[in-house]
Image (tube, rainbow, N blue to C red; front, side, top):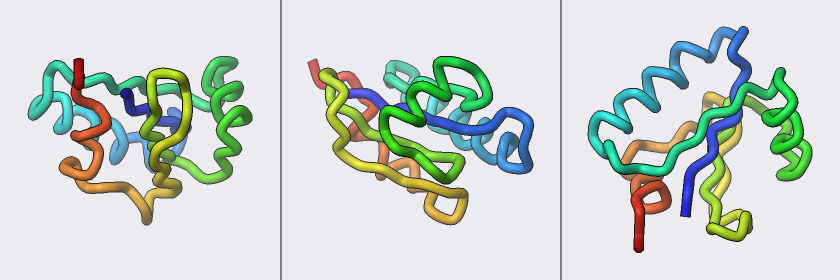
Length: 91
């Protein structure tokens, strides 16, 4: 499992997202968290693939890409404990 964070680097929520991820990685250094800017090709593709319409969005994914959980918009950011299960290496 892994966690994918889709956000806009040039936005008002950038600092909130980066602080959230920095704090998460400090608590869980072996976690699988990938951040993608939706204004770049890969981030745009992932946004389209998972039908994400609000940013920032955090997606918990199985290894095959299946969505387990989605949080969209800065009013729906999860607590760190909420995503730790999905981001920590289960193998």
